[in-house]
Length: 344
Image (tube, rainbow, N blue to C red):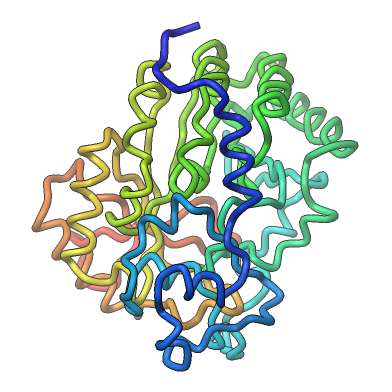
């Protein structure tokens, strides 16, 4: 156990914040004083992918600003109902790589567990917004089959906990899952991909930090910050305890039109992350999921912007610009030195 400075009673605090999250476009616009901009923002109150915004993340938005880059990521819009060729419900064809329910094995050396279908926030560009979680997660009765698969496949050294969001599991359930993974001798690392610490920093509890510190598995936490403004929600205050526990902190972002598709936003993001102790890791091109085409940045514009970012910041502050193509052996990274339009 390592000494940490997180306050007591926190598990109840984050659960209450989650229960009290805003769940309609009307409530979100009212909280930000944007009722007069309703027509221009074209919210969709009947979206099958409903709004969910906890109060800490609301604090990262600027009241009265209809162009706020954080608001754009979470406000259900009529734009999502536009059918766009090439945008599908399963853009990465993940169902073809699921040998047992709730487990994806696409790449050598690592496998991914869909731990839950729940998220602390509903990002409008989410590439799993149509994922069949009711039949495709590793929780409950389906977990033994996933663990048995991991035991058989001895080349797997790293397990990625994803979802939904793995930190929507409470401390007890997450600890039990870690214990089960630790019992598989060939596993060396556990990687958690989570947006929850960004939108609900109170989820970084003392119990969570202590359990990660005690694990024999090397722990990596990949958070998901798209804009420096999101750091206002309080994430930097929670990170020293994780760093003291030996957790490696990385960030993945998605390049989103109207959110971070300009140089000032990307440099501020890299600077803010590094100041908080997080290393920029990935900058993803948008996965072509149905309902998110209005966030897409044209590839040529993305290349130009990325080249400018490489010139503007030191290499350790520049994430890899990546895309994922179904059937490939790994993510593709754009290499500016190879010339325009060249991926590795």
